[in-house]
Amino acid sequence: MVRISAVKIIGPGTRNLALDVIYKVYRQEKHWINSAQHEIPEDIALTKSMLWFLAMVDSKPVGVLRLCYDPPLIFPPDFKAT
Image (cartoon, rainbow, N blue to C red; front, side, top):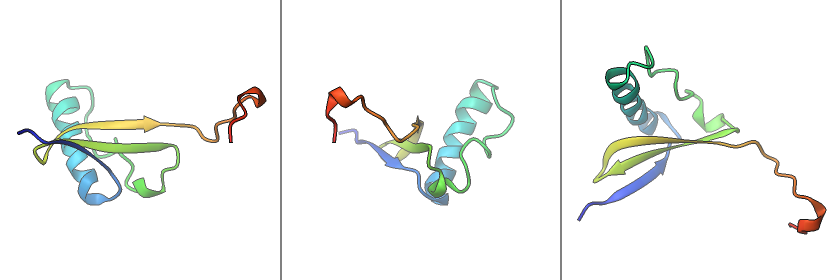
C-alpha cells in the first residue's frame, strides 16, 4: 500500500529535502530558476506570512506546497464570528 503524507517544513532537515524537490522540478525539468537555495527562507520558523509543507510518497519527497496568508482575518459583524 502506498503511503502519502505531508509534513510542515520547520527546520533545515525538511527544508533541504524540499529544496531538492524544487531544484529537480524548477531547475532541472522546467529551467525556471537558477538556484533553489533562496526559494524557501532559511529562517522558516520565523516566517509569519507563509507555511511550507513537504509532500511525501512512501517517505520519498515528491512535492512542496506553500500556503500564503495575511492574518488577521477581519469578519463582517453580521457573521458574528468569534
